[in-house]
Amino acid sequence: MPSHGGEPDDGSDDGLAPVIPLFSASVSTTPRGAGKDARGGPQQERWNATWADDYAPGDEGGDGDRGRLDESGQIERDIAEKNLLKKLRSRSLSLREARGVIAEHDLDDDAIETVLSSFERLGYLDDAALAEQLVHAGSGRKGQGRKAIAQTLAKRGIPRDIADAALASLPDDDAERALEFARSKAPSMARLDRDTAVRRLVGQLSRRGYSGSVAMTAARDALDEATAPRSGVRFR
Image (cartoon, rainbow, N blue to C red):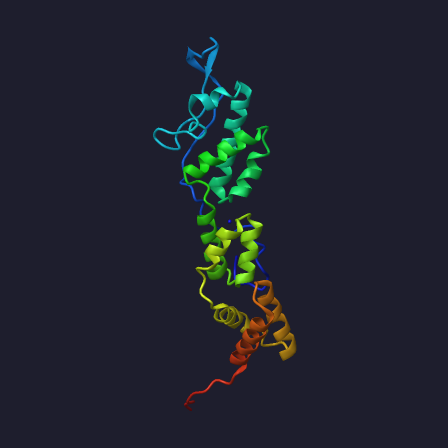
């Protein structure tokens, strides 16, 4: 899933809208009231296909794919899909993060990849879209520099090539964004001596991913502006 306060954001909640639409889906293992499976036993209700009109995750492999899974394995896979969907409703996930969610279930590697592929195909997992959201949130809402945003992308498991492409969309304006952030903090440091104010402001900027030189210049300029005498005509 932040503010422009004095403390840095930890990146744990990026405030990003999920990349999936809000909808309801459920898994049920309750036997249907009618119908028998191929072995003569009660037919199991596998997936409530509210994802789309004619598609449910896990179906892309056809009957042959499901046929390779025994009944207990299919139930576990359905539960894994439902759990992943629940996570995605509240927070966008990278493919690596989604794989970690699915890996919590007793599925083999082929089943894990099948689940992830179906979510990717439906657009519920999209590393490129997530990277763009993280870049936008970091540069705009959090006032972060390029370095901090790159660290966030790596932490979230975005592949390097996708992260680089998303970062390439950022204008080369770290100095301007650093100064804008410093200006928002400088007035609250008016009571501090100059050296202390500079040190604190540089520290805040550095934690947001700005280089030492950029942070120092922005801090000094913002403090100079905040302490400069106001000019104008005074009327008696």
